[in-house]
Length: 315
View 1 (cartoon, rainbow, N blue to C red):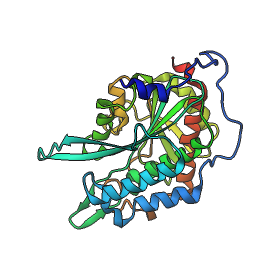
View 2: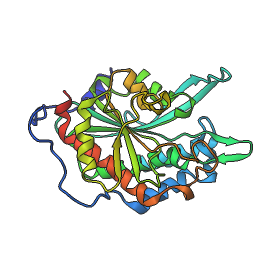
View 3: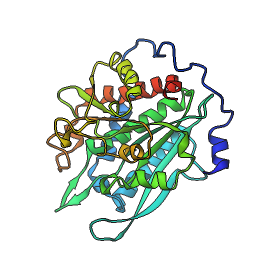
View 4: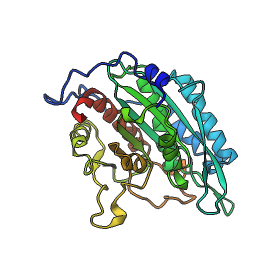
């Protein structure tokens, strides 16, 4: 626990007046696009460009992607913890026992009234270059990272009721190492985290389907997902959080949210089902489904908005 940072982060804490009962507070009916579509797509294309060399942790391509993300954080007006958005960490590569250096990028937007935090995460690393081919990882996970940047822009200019922390995590592809580093050396007291929202692969779906995992473990989150599903034109489906019909269908531990779940922190994970480009060199920006992606990113923003207005229901 770091008292000085907590005081800064959770200044003027007060109880949220909504309580656990009463109607769910939702946004007014509106169009389901809440992002600057051109910027969202431009950020995805930039992060998934060949010049980023697949963004493998510890490589120059990964560092290029990180500099791009840090620059976006700086322009948005979100605040760092301490004097830098970058939070380095070191871990042991499970394949060859070498030491690998990773860097998480973390910032926050202050809330108005609450001592609870919504943590939004997306990993920015991918698998790099293999056999001379660049694995650009447009869907996995330039899509979630670009959506994270869009969400920062949204909430930087529309102050939330609760503090929102945004974390672009590194080394997910090497065993969820960025998420582990976040909890092992947290920039604030993790007991303040009410819910984690994770975006990993949200841009590619010909069926117009985006899944939300987590409500089987945390049924109290289901009402928030239902609220968003009623507002968006994509098909927002709950599931992929139990081992039925097969273990492969359970995404509970398949991305960074799994680390937070193991620590008892509720999560919602947004992602599409596996497609032919998954962990293939064909996961290129040209293969995403742009109209779906724009609305998927907007749907996650809607979910954070609804959570922000109703966090007292989780207490």
